[in-house]
Length: 351
Image (cartoon, rainbow, N blue to C red; front, side):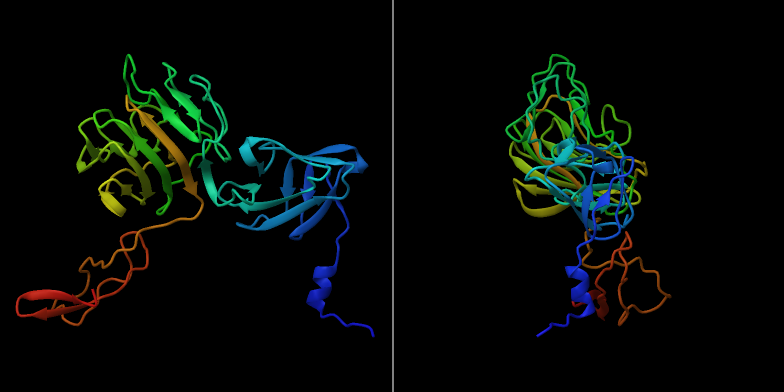
């Protein structure tokens, strides 16, 4: 008996004809495409994908035949590929899934599309040979100052050897100068740092100048204390492993830490200065012996939510029965609480 399929089922069962590359460009109109080389050539380069350029849009490409090769070209057009390297589709490796990153204006491998910067340091680089190398898996390219070859990559981590003859901020240092990041409230940098010393400084965070000391760092100082950018002491640190988060605000930043005495993520400080934009993810060392791994800048924005927030902007009068603000200092949605009073003591109901 014939089976009648609904229109939606007929749509998914439809196999589109192969879409040929034209002068390095592929026009995509759906989430799945069979693709072919231009003119049936044995091999062809794919530089640019046009169409469907909507943030987080996912497209799967599969070659028409294993006998012809399509080479996806890294960063020639609008493709940004794993390990900053070309990807060839042929033989048994005939398919790839890409996701569009509107912030970068690039199609990325779907596994990496959640990050503007991702460096897991899975490659191996000797001292003096890190500058200009791609972040692994990417995106990102490393710009390095290292006059004494103290910076290496091995064992899945960026390693600072310390013991410099002439210590100076930013030497060794690493910046991701290929990825300028527009300041947005909620743009954050995440990293793991393992410190060996408590008497040598290092900074991790965002920088505007690509040289020397940084603008928006978590600063592990030479006195065993964590500082913010103006030198204000925040907390003590030890020679251990920390997870850090630097979260940009429209002005300033939130500095968060986990590790050592801080068993849970802890808000260490709120910076109320610095409006530089664009900024660059960076690490500026002086003479600390340390390893860094899992350095990332997610595409998604995140802001801490205050337990309660108010600027006392209402009309003059008794606060009893009124609510705290529903919007926090960076426009984030914030729980509202009710003011209550008992004699001369104020309290928040529900706090």
